Image (tube, rainbow, N blue to C red):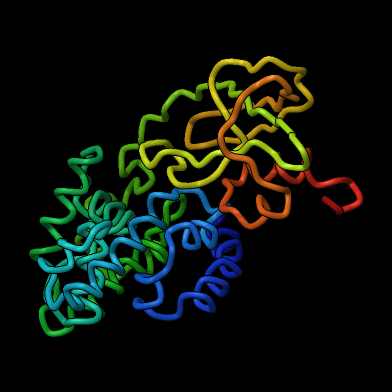
Length: 285
Ligand code: SF4
């Protein structure tokens, strides 16, 4: 998916989020289920939980006033802390994202692989950050990577650091491509079990991939019951076949009506199960 498409995809999520949670105080006070509900469909659910925990930390301790304080906020890493501290607080610290990794690798002709490349790029960026305007400097460096020294095309003739660049003769050789993880196929089984107008449903444990989200009971082993359909989806390098089974004779703890399930945070795959197997073709439930 290209960057523009990614941005277009998240805009409605961003607007809904700001409407419901316009300030850090709203986010801190919100129920984590509502936060996950606003995030549902985007994946990477740990990020939503971290944002929630981060907001609670800020409401309790106040807004951090430096790079090192920002690193104490749950879910905030070196890139985010560096971007906030340099752009908002004027602190002379680097903000090193993937664009800066690429500029560094080409500028130095470095064959280092991640995570070593990230450490080298951070050390270099820390040494060259322009102390009078660190926020603008960091943004300029990231923009250089995003617009000039692009992943598949480098416009070296317009690049302001062309004269010092060791990789300009063959820029696409840098950085060394990541070794792709081999794609793995997984099969999971979701139980569609209906009883007196309600469906079996469960909340996943926080240690699971979509921790805190809800799902039709899903496991690695088949349930007893006819397979009535299959949903295919991809998470990182996992190609997952989610087989939906019509399950009758099974005890489950949590039951909810279709209307109640519609309001729960479901992952994109589980939302598809809901739409295809619970919502009637007419749109009624
Ligand atoms: S000269 Fe080319 S390869 Fe080197 S940093 Fe500039 S755009 Fe990238």
